[in-house]
Amino acid sequence: MPAINWYPGHMAKTRRMLQENLKLIDVVVEILDARAPLASRNPDFDDLFSGKARVVLLNKSDLADSNATKRWISFFARRGVEAAGVSATGGAAKKIAVSFVEKAARPRVDAMKQKGVNKVVRCMIVGIPNVGKSTLINRIAGMNRAEVGDRPGVTRGKQWVKITPYLELMDTPGMLWPKLEDQELAKHLAFLGSIRDEIMDSEELALDLLALLQRMVPAQLAERYGKLSPDTPRAELLDAVCLSRGFLLRGGELDTERAARVALDEFRAGKLARITLELPEAEA
Ligand SMILES: Nc1nc2c(ncn2[C@@H]2O[C@H](COP(=O)(O)OP(=O)(O)OP(=O)(O)O)[C@@H](O)[C@H]2O)c(=O)[nH]1
Ligand SMILES: [Mg+2]
Image: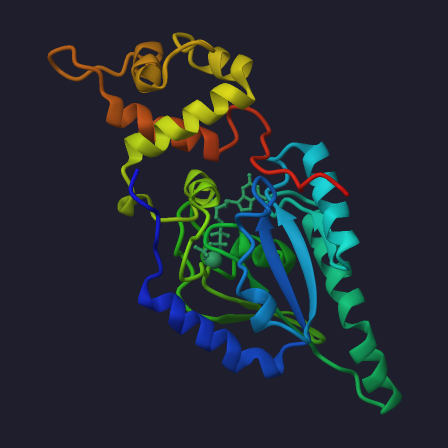
């Protein structure tokens, strides 16, 4: 597959916008995808947000392996970063997110209180495309304030959402970084749907995904796509999906394009298994 490298102009614009708004911000909440915390971490953010109070939320943890999520949380803790697993589409996310933000903002809030001021906490929600930033904001607001969608690039500009008189959240467009140096990690982002499918060959991408799942969760894969076995060669994986689902074109040809789309969609929706694609490196 050709190298995945996608950094449209509007992302450079987003970076400038984040930078310009930083002076207003008390806490930066970085949303990662719990299924790929390494790939979904923007290496640029350390620079961009240095000196700010920061917390990490591993979102979509309902789709990730819960043991792996625990390991990631301690990985971040060892690096002095407070992290928690959440599911923005589920009930508990609001409580967890708000308590993390309050804790991170407490030193500034207390300092202002000493001066007799009730500080409004302003919090920026950042992350790569499609990790659930806007969904989390809606969950915290208790209503649909921000637009969400099951594709990357839904949020186009900043949007402030007032939660209480003392808490305001800023939604931001998803941001990738200029160079996806590690192609293995870039592929994980593509599997998750954080890179626009239009710029990739979806059949190649789906073959890569199916081959990976064949190694990671052979039994679940075979159960979902009956004609696919742990020994199916890579080149025949999409054919096996077609045969399992009866995806045939007129004339009896296999509709591998449809199989590719279905395999990617079903993985992204968590229909195969709870899978985490990356684990923290072995502890020293
Ligand atoms: N299963 C599951 N799906 C989620 C979760 N959070 C968000 N989603 C889904 O993920 C998709 C993307 O959500 P958005 O909130 O639009 O993501 P975003 O980070 O704002 O994306 P951009 O604005 O494009 O950068 C939507 O289809 C959501 O329903 C979660 O915790 N679990
Ligand atoms: Mg959004």
